[in-house]
Amino acid sequence: MHNKKDFIVSSFYKFVYLEEPEVIFDLFEKKLKAFDIKGTFIIGVEGVNASFSVKSYQFEKVKNVIKNLIQSNVKFKSQRNENHAFLRLKIKLKKEIISLGKKDIDPNQCSGKHLDPISWEKLMMKKDSLIIDTRNSYESDIGTFKSSLKVDTKNFRDFPKWIQSNKDKLKNKKIGMFCTGGIRCEKASNYLIKLGFKNIFQLNGGIIEYLKITKNKNKFWKGECFVFDERVSLNTNLKKGKYSQCFACRSAITNEEKKSRFFKDGEHCPKCFKIKTKNQKNRFKERNKQMVLAKEKGIKHLGS
Image (cartoon, rainbow, N blue to C red; front, side, top):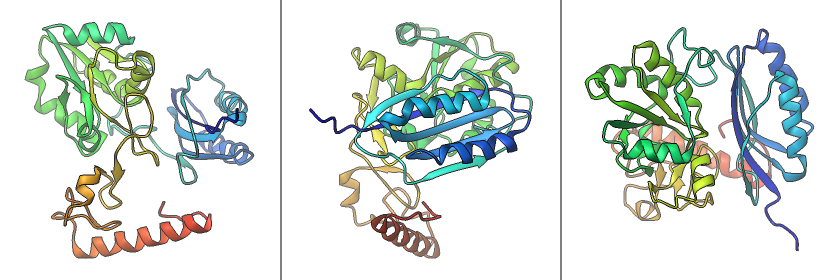
């Protein structure tokens, strides 16, 4: 029988010192264009962070190309999908592959203890543990581990400020941290250790790997998992969830919210209607119009 899921959606990160990231950037651009691949690759001195989709039969070749380019072993977190999960291929050169905005953060030097799903669930049940959702508010709003503490930040660079404001909550606690794929926890745990905190743990592989391995059998996870691609969210079976996305504020929105008088496709949703200006809404409207036209014609749009 023909398998309709002819694509692989995959993500990885690797903290590895790249002496000449500009050279690696050029090589990624050259090598990846040989494949039917879409997604985002962020390259910097500290390594590579990427999420992409590719034809199933090309996946192994792509993995080998990536490992050879950075001269390092890489763990890929992958799911099958019926089509591409991204609009186009973007390769970016940045100072940080995940931006915390703090100097001297090096996960290779030290990070929290990585816990497998069984150990993670045991940690969550301990009375002296504190579980921190390191993701942004628009991600944690649609799903998180029960009893976890949300940082409610707009971007990861706000995380250190949140920690400084909530230090008292962290005292004498076993601190467990999680995020979508694990990369934010690498930097967040290193930051906390450098602040002097001792018992720091992180969910190995992040939410995606946890759900893949456990199937959420013990119901510790509540809701859906926000993802940064066309699927918007994944349910506990790692299939496309029930959410759409607001083109203005990028928040995940339900079908009920789309029925609201504060929702207008491509312009605003109930979550951002009151905070976006008229000029912003007009810009979003025009951008969405151009993206839809580009998608219909099968061409790239710079705003996508």
